[in-house]
Length: 348
Ligand code: 5GP
Image (cartoon, rainbow, N blue to C red):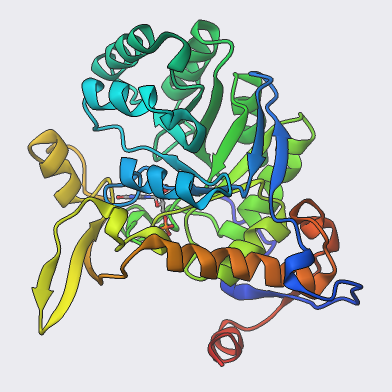
């Protein structure tokens, strides 16, 4: 047994320190990023926000809303859509704002082959391969096979939280490594398994490893407000993925329930009992559920929430004098604060 002594940080442990700036307005800030992916060589331009591949978030409707928004945000689609629906979505220009989530079993691999064949030139260019624990060798082998079979697809793979595994995934074919274990809003891994890693430190360490190899990282989970998203970019994240912050909207494709005169809807982890029963028929005996189900208030169109998120990122850039989102990490100095103080001032 070993105890690592350096103190790891989460979003509530820090604030971004203001810096002198020549920017006079938030509108002077460009919050889009331009990337050329390491392996696929495809390019991307947009606000690097990704809706998580979770029920109620990673939906076709969300992708359509992002398309309408026009800022280049993307959605990691839930992997449960049937092949015919995926084909129709991609035929109608779905690729620009989405990532195809490829499951790790044979059935999902066959579905992906079928969708690719049917779509020809319209086939998905960006794919997302993710497992709760990206440290298993089977996952790395699977990633290598997918990279070999699809050399021209952009692959996002994860989840991991440490530099050495980020390097391993990039060298095995990932263009983007998804970072985050145990910090999701409806994740119970920290409680069930005692496993996790503070998200801000994970981003800093993984981004450093990825950027050294011309790879990118996507911070996944743990953001509960726009300020957290800004902190994730400040720490070095190239993309930020969110579930809870984008849940509860018209785009969830979920049924609303009425409670005490208020509209609500169910939001749940993809490893929760709810998700396992819905998609697999039951909870496998050998595994404990590592996600929970919550009822959240209905929040209307995602447009309003997007405005808040993008406004927050713009504001952070203005405070530190970053004319472009790309400069935010170089201009960021974090100050460590006590969590209690952060909450008090954060809410004021
Ligand atoms: P959020 O933005 O809601 O804090 O986190 C979203 C992320 O939580 C997802 O992208 C995914 O990585 C993670 N997640 C989603 N469902 C579950 C689950 O049931 N269990 C665990 N451990 N993580 C989950």
